[in-house]
Image (cartoon, rainbow over all chains, first blue to last red; front, side, top):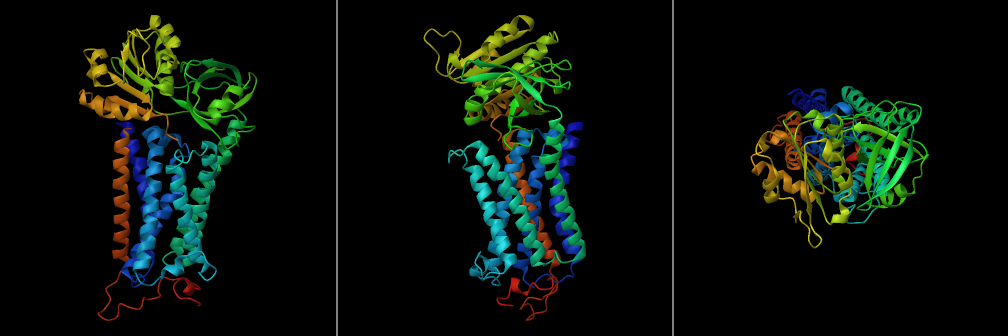
Length: 443
Length: 57
């Protein structure tokens, strides 16, 4: 209940911050509008779009309280949805201005004859189009994640700066003193979040370096990095949580990746953490294998609400595939370390037997926990005695315990598995509040 | 959180924000006597912003 209230608070705050400029604008300007209803509507949508874009950074800036209420994967998805929504409102803003008859198409360009305030608005609109198109088409364009991350950040700052200048210079509604004060406050909020995200947080991390102690090749094109805190106690975490890894020379390096811890969450002060990373591109496939023991690394965490520690139940059903099994293995290792007697069922999907990265660890933990495991292979080898195909309703029915409705369910894996489980588990009468999912392809 | 739930919330929020723009446009609009609705009034515009609407001004 407390979590729901926190969620309502943060969601309400977001809606308030986006719509509040409209209230101030409506109250601080004499009831005249522009005389054109369409232009007034265009202005209203423009203000909303600008506030949404300024708050986009807040959604992904790792504010623990907000991330804790929803889960970072949900916040990132919401960030994506709101980015598209802001673009739609910007398009509506332009279409309404053109429809009003007061603004010919030629007056909305970037040419020298176009007034500067309009040029700024056009540039902000084009940058918004670019940022959304590049984010949605990143995989289709085969763009490197690192390149996208850099371009995304630069475009985001450019959009807010250009759009804020556009609004301030056009002057309609924004020329009143309350609106100017509010605009300055929103800009300060944006810069404050940027400062915290890009300067203060990395500065704090600078005092807490980590170093690689082991870099082990695992089955299924994966590697396990074992990290040790240097000169600080490190941290313990709730099993299932993740941290952002940064292998740059300093924590200010822009490239960082969210990786789940695969080791037990109960870490003694100064204890090591393990991260199992699947080869999915340049960073994980080339840079991670090149890391040597003693190498400096920066760890920002822990984050996430996907944890058995947050959900009490008579037992747990863990459903995963690929790299998504890492947080599930962390849960199993933690429960085993605590001597937990509750039953745990693991449904582990993979393409081939050789892709079962965590099989050795899982088998090693079976003796210490009431753990039953079903491996489900898409392409089983000849003579395979386990499940084959995909984790579907039939497989679940064969392996779920009798009182399965009371268990807590954790699902993490590739998108097809996640999509399938989101519809299959409710069809087995499992209450929605007992199904917890985290998408590891969230960025 | 379920991806479909987040997508639905996203669509509802977009509708809410679009509706708030609509309410804003209605709120700032004052009744204009017949025949006097055009050209636009200039109240609410800042100094030196004529070029926003008028070319070469």
